[in-house]
Length: 98
Ligand SMILES: N[C@@H](CCC(=O)N[C@@H](CS)C(=O)NCC(=O)O)C(=O)O
Image 1 (cartoon, rainbow, N blue to C red):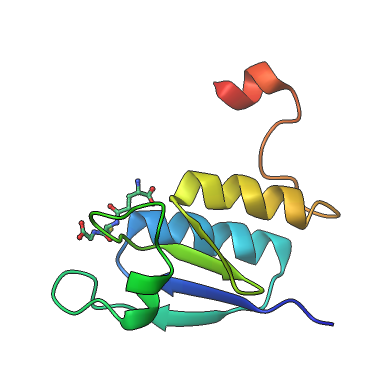
Image 2 (cartoon, rainbow, N blue to C red; image 1 turned 90 degrees about the vertical axis):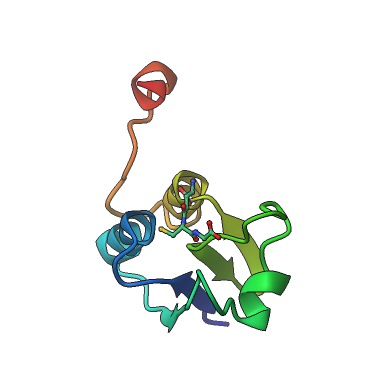
């Protein structure tokens, strides 16, 4: 079964851009949903962001129904899930930490 990937995003968000670049590097097809994140958060954004309960920020990556918030965490997740091409982060833990 093909992966279902949705990104709750806003075009000008540098955090969203980080996730968009990661998905592009990996060649992942995804459904991008533009959010009015300041004044009118969608019900999907409110529902899919339990790990950021106060601000419900974008971006949120939704992979086969499971949410990942925080762009750096999403980056690490993308790198681990689609690990067959285009490594994004160094494999050495210290270099990764830097
Ligand atoms: N640390 C977060 C920052 C994300 C962030 O600040 N997103 C902003 C848009 S660029 C947001 O959704 N703000 C909504 C709010 O604060 O209510 C990340 O890296 O994903």
